[in-house]
Amino acid sequence: MKPLFLLGKGEALLGRDGLTMESLPIEFKKTFPDQDPKYIDKLSQLAGIAAARALKESPQPLPEEVRKDFAVVVGTAFGAVDSTIDFDTQALAKGPNAVNPMDFPNTVANAAGSRIGIWMQLKGPNVTLTNGETSLLDAAGFALQGFNSGLFQDCFLGAADKAPDFLKPSALRHSSAAEIREGACFFRAAASAEGRVLGRLTDYFALQLTPDLGLPQAFQSQFERLWEGVEWLGCPEDTPFKSGFPPGLPRAFPAPTVLEVGLGGLESLNAFLASPFSCGVVAVFSKPERKISFVKIEK
Image 1 (cartoon, rainbow, N blue to C red):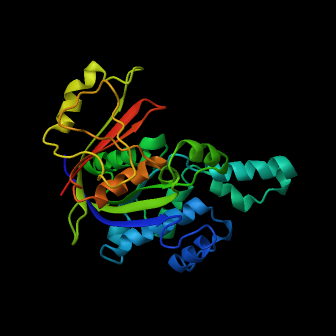
Image 2 (image 1 turned 90 degrees about the vertical axis):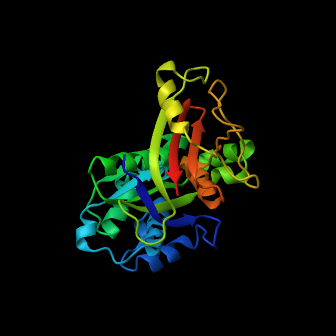
C-alpha cells in the first residue's frame, strides 16, 4: 500500500486564536471574500477556514490539473445535527411556509465538505463519514484506501464538528472541557511529498469489538500486524487525555495508551501530531459503539 503524505495542516477551533462564534463570520469573510456568511452554517464556515489554512502551508495556487482530481474527505461526529434542529424548530414554531429556504442546505449532512469543494473548485470525490468518536480516523482510512485504489491523487482530509446545544450541559457534567471542543482541522494530503511533510499515513484498521469489549478471534492476525514495529502509542504526559484501552485486547508492547477523544476524534490526532513522538499508531476507542479505529503515521 502506498503512503499518503500529510503536507499541511489548518485549524479553526472555537476558543483558540481569538476565534469565537461572534468573530467567525468576519474570519470567514476574510478567507472567502466572495462568499456571504449570512446563510452559511457555522460548521461549514469553520471547515472552510480550516481547509484554506491547510492549503496555505503547501504550494499554491492549485492548477486545474490538480483541482480536477482533488478530493475532500470529512469525518464528523454530529454532522449537520445542530443546523437541522434549528431549521426544524423554526418550521414547528412558525409553520413550514415561514422557514427561509436559504437555510435548508445547512441541514444536509455533507454540507461542510461539499462547500469546501465548491468554494475551492475541487472536482474530485467528496465524501463525509459520520461515525461518532472514530469519525476522523475512519475518514483518514477512507482517504488512504481511496488514494490507493486510484480515486484521486490529492485531498483535504479532516474533521469538522459543532455540538448541538442541548448536548453541552450533559457533556460538561461528565467530561473535561477539552472533550467538547468545537471546530475543524484539515490536512492537505497528496500522493507525493512537496516541501515540508508532517507525516505519512501508511495503514488503517477499524474493528467492532465483542459485547465484553474483547477482540474477535477472526481479527487477531490483522490486529497483530498493525502493531508490528510500533514504538509509541498515545499522547504526551502533559496532555489532558486519559488512558482508556479496552479490557480484553492484547497488550503488544509496554504501557499502551488509547486517546479518549472529543468530537470526531479531532483532538486525538492533534495531540498526536503535536507530540515529539508523532510516529506510530493513533487509536480511538468509542465505547458506545464498541468500536476501535487505528491509523498508522510514519515520518
